Amino acid sequence: KIKKKILCLESENCSYPNNDPREYSLEVHQDLAHQIKIASVSWKKNWSKFSSSEQDEVMNLFSLESGYTKENMLTFLNSLETPDAANYYDVVVDNVLKNHNANLIDDTVNYLKKIRNGSNENKIASDVAETIKSGSPFVSEALSKHSTSFITQQTEETFKTLSKSLPKNSSESLNIEAALIEFDMVSTGG
Image (cartoon, rainbow, N blue to C red; front, top):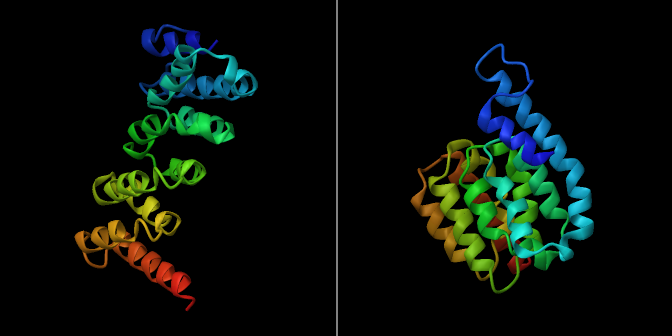
């Protein structure tokens, strides 16, 4: 059913309302997101049985432009065990962090916190900082509100550098500065 919905997007020749230019696409994307939500129950149960090409095919759904689709894909990804979920970090960065939809940030932050470990902590902090610095305005601001989640002893300098590079008194700058102060208070016991 999912492949059929994707074909509907590509062909624009399925039985969906088409009274204005965006209505057809919106209807197909909502239906597609619903199908993903249904399929994700089976995907989760059988994920370890899927071949890597089948897993990649599922993860390619992140590349669809719909926020509805991305949201359901993030929910699915967050339901996987951490090692499996961590394999798709680049997919999330490329298709969600570098996107313009700030409504996806909470689920994205949950995913990043879930997969974070000592070996990828700097990479995650670097990608988060880069998104805050040069991502779309709404995503940058939303992500900066979660910066406390990414500041550790190991990543503190990344966020100090970021703070200095942002426009003074911007929402992002103020959020980063507050997170750094909070981190300093917690780490020094103050």
